[in-house]
Amino acid sequence: MDHSPRIRTVLGCTLLVAALGAGLTACSGSGHPLSARPYDAAGQISFSGPVGGKKADPDKPLEVTAQGDEGRITDVTATDALGRYVAGELAADGRRWHTTSPLAADAQYTVRVSTTDEDGAPGRKVLTFETGDPSDQKALKVTFGPKGGTYGVGQPVTAELNKAVKDEKARAIVERALKVTSEPSADGGSWYWVDSRTLHYRPKEYWPAHATITASSNLKGIKVTDRLWGGESKPLTITTGDRVEAVTDAGSHSMTVYRNGKAINEIPVTTGKPGFETRNGVKVVLGKEYYVRMRGTSIGISAGSSDSYDLPVYYATRVTWSGEYVHAAPWSTGSQGYANVSHGCTGMSTGNAAWFFDTVREGDIVKVVNSYGQDMDPFGNGFGDWNVSWKKWGEGSALSATGKADPVRQARLSPEV
Image 1 (cartoon, helix red, strand yellow):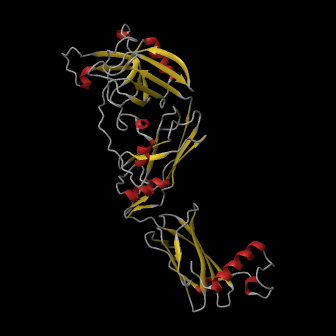
Image 2 (cartoon, rainbow, N blue to C red):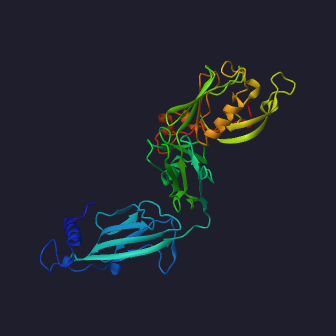
Image 3 (cartoon, rainbow, N blue to C red):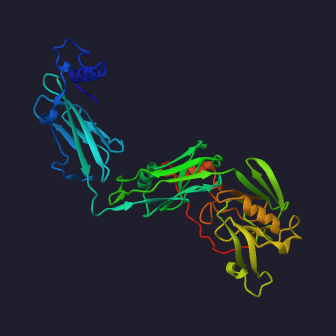
């Protein structure tokens, strides 16, 4: 700020007086006005905030002005109960201070005003007030996922908004208020706007094994748009277990399962045959079902077709919402390890499927390579988040200058054996 020389001197001395304590001065002897305790500046300033217990309109800026001809405002700070500062600007002549960022709704504020009088003596005034919760606003709330528990290292954190946020500036406000931490720490981390109501968060690589991950929202009371304010949201804490990865090579018809980087099992498998090829790429375990009835009609195969099927399937580990599983396939044991004969799932013997079912948990990695199938969708058919390059992932953030979120692709909700 461009204060006059006298004001600069007063500020410097005031700071030194505070540092040195009572009875000491940074300028001259005990007769100097700065050696006295600050006086109550209530009569030297006017404040645009509420009085008499009323609540302030968070849409209206705050203003502090100096009264009289000689007094000046030297500093103003405004913070809410959470310690968040409100940006403001002090005029060069010290006559007026006003906010330059919006207040939060339904919040408590403390405003500390410092002044000097015509003799250079310091004045102080602390003002407190609350902001209201405008009746025409509807709160923007966040639901974090998944539910609390222990997951694999591939589990993204999700944030579901109860209202659509489409404007890029509003998205940036939301994103800045959503916090994710990991202990031990992960390598980077960023939100990606899947659509106007859904965000996913992942680090650059998988989460560390045996980590504690927390997600929280600081949106409460924050103005997102003219008619939308942040509401209170429940934080989330999850943990990760061992790093378990299953890599299926469709070309060699085998699956290798790793725990914390060490191979612990190699299993003969069969994957999707021509026309029903298994998707390539990284998938994440979505859930486990001991028994699933799988029918070809659910994926558009007519009942009279040679490809038709209606089978009881056991030890089914789901990896896409459209119905791709790792499961027991006792009818194809002769082909497992030699040929791909399924309708898209990864089949194995009942014993191997039971072992796999008991070994993996939600969030563990299931990766398919060397298949002639399409690539796994990033969103909309499970968690294909890890198939997005880190550079592209960063562009999905509203805090990126070029951030543009991809649309969610429509997924089939049917099993493929």
